[in-house]
Image (cartoon, rainbow, N blue to C red; front, top):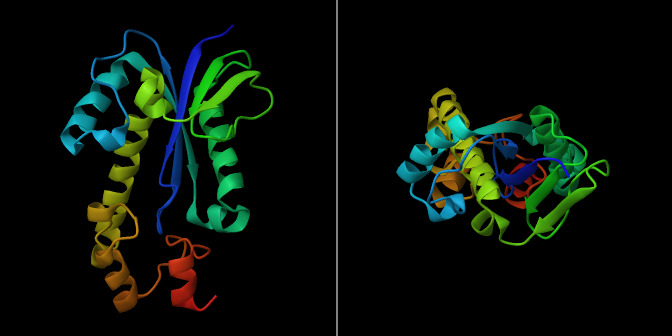
Length: 190
């Protein structure tokens, strides 16, 4: 059997911005305190992400909002997983653990499985979760600088009251908002 790889995603339910799937492979001992990124404070995530960058390799599978609209979420997740594993150069015989109910791994990865709650139970999946969250949040903060009226740095594209108010006041941003998602589709009359 090959190396151990953890896979997790962030941004699945967002109204705006990309989906990011991350594949993580440890190259040394993982730091203590790893768990699902949602259970950590922003400061804890950043601190752990800095430590993880020393002891892990990461592959990033970015999927644009337009691709999510074009392919649907399930196929977008498959695309993100494929890109993340390719970016990591994961071996076909690697033991791959993906967070979730559904195994979105390409067929060539014969030792892969989906585990519900793996982002909190399996440290290498927690590493992928933390890296994904920190990386996408940084991306969304940069997007917030480009589109300051939407305050992406505060909600990272998720469906919040503030985000909806910005959408109603300033409209949908082409290539940024997911037009196939119900709240956005309703606003644009699809």
